[in-house]
Each structure stands twice: as structure tokens, then as C-alpha cells.
Length: 156
Image 1 (cartoon, rainbow, N blue to C red):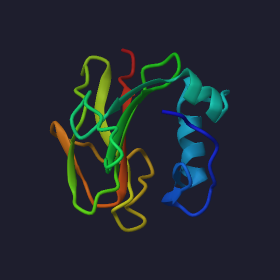
Image 2: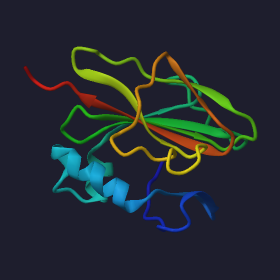
Image 3: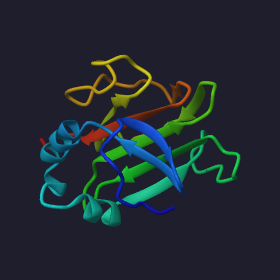
Image 4: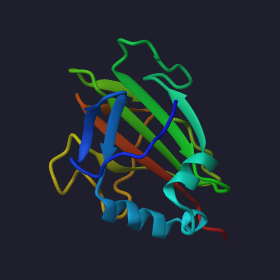
């Protein structure tokens, strides 16, 4: 998998030659970056190059990389930190249910829905990393993406 610079418009997922351009509101991305101390001083390129990225399909650890695939998920751990993101892409014309990684509850507070492009604005991008996500899976609506975040628990 390769990552290259994209365009900031239009928002959402847009097919382009050689792949798909994903664009979300930059003010939301900037807020997330500012709220994550381990990555504040890094460029997006540095973040992506230093991140631990695991590729999945609708089932964890089982990506469908065939030419006819319509789904992909990635779990990303920020460079040098414990903050996790799980991003699910559904380019299929039907809803798909994706498994989400189990969290060590001693380390993480739990998954929260930050972005779900199937929801109407302003519910599509949550202000404070969104509502909790319960259960071992998440249904991603047709032609949309969902981004979950798992923040670390505060030290006692």
C-alpha cells in the first residue's frame, strides 16, 4: 500500500487515477493533531511514515486485495504513542459489517466514532471524537468511510 499527497477538495472519497482521494475537513484534522501531543510537531508525511499500520478487510487481519474488492480497513497507531485509529472504507453498494479490534481496557478508554460519512452534517464529523462504539463490529453504510479513535486512559 502506498500513500501519496492528495487534494483537499471535494470532501469525502473520490475515485482518481491510480486510487482514491480521501479528504476530510482540515480544521477537524488540525484539532485532532493539536489534541494528540505525540504528533503535534510532525508533518502528515512523518506521521504516516512513522505510524504502525495494519491492513484488514471486513474481518481483522484478512484484507481482500483483489481487483474486485470494495472494502478495506486499516488500524493505525501513531508514531511513538498509544493512540489508535481504525478506518473502514466501504466502496460497495451495500452496507458491510466490519470487525473492530479489541482494546486493552487498561490502556485505552474504548473506541469512539469520530467520522462516519454516511451521516448527515453535522453528525458526520464529531467534535470531541464522538460517541462510544460498543460491540465487536461496526456497520459501514454503502460508499462511505468510518474513522474510530481510541485514546489512552489518563495516568492515575
